[in-house]
Length: 392
Image (cartoon, rainbow, N blue to C red):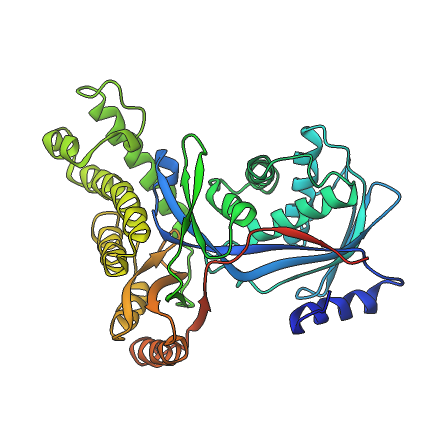
């Protein structure tokens, strides 16, 4: 393969730390969620896309069961045995890789070790799933090193990576991030049913692009708010089951049913439920709009989603609201909303293709003027999911 500039840097890193040559390059992307926020833990629907920012593992198999990796951005090493890893209390990144090895071993996939370098350009702590990208890239490296690359399906790999993050790292994430990193496809969004894990790829309009604005604001409140919102949704389901006994989650409730029985719910619980119920309906409406190339409606639905997240779910922030306003102020922006858990992190906008550079500078200056902070702005179209490239 002819390496691009970034891949060449990874090759240079390998040459600086290992003798000989690598045999494979594993690549797994980060993601942005186009619409469908806080619906996943309510058995609902999400519509993410894979980004052209990724985590890469350049590696070669070992003859033993050890994994030895050097992380370029952290300038640090990890070295462990697959069957008896030891949690690293000094640095976090090795724990994701150790957990993935354990999760794959539990599926009775024969594994052997590998060595190489890890590099990522998915911004950390921004809500664009750098951790899932690391997990999936590591999983692909494990499988390729053991000549088991086709032993597991994409959903099986995604679920193993989620298990690693939930049980070994200790982060209670949903399945969306690992799913889209594994199963993304260039030029497509991925509609995921978070109850059944059924999925289908939805063609994304070639004449539009995505702009992602990193507010640089802290997401420290997101964890406690996540637990609180989840409990409020579960409370709403329990109360609604008195008149809708067949429902198991808010995914099963329509807007008409919710309005008919809103008197059963405290106001805050009602508003939390209203966001989730309406957001599930917006996801389905967005898919239908994409399939008939009604891009302006997609933008309107994104705008409605942000309003609902801000007013009903109350997970926006001054920084996110101002980022969204800065995006919408550009005439080539079709719609914009916060993406991720909220409070900080990123917003995403749908824009007309061809105006990417102008929109980037417009949003940077507009947000900086409002917040006195220079944001990071990323441009991406829906990109390919995880893959392993043989080098020799």
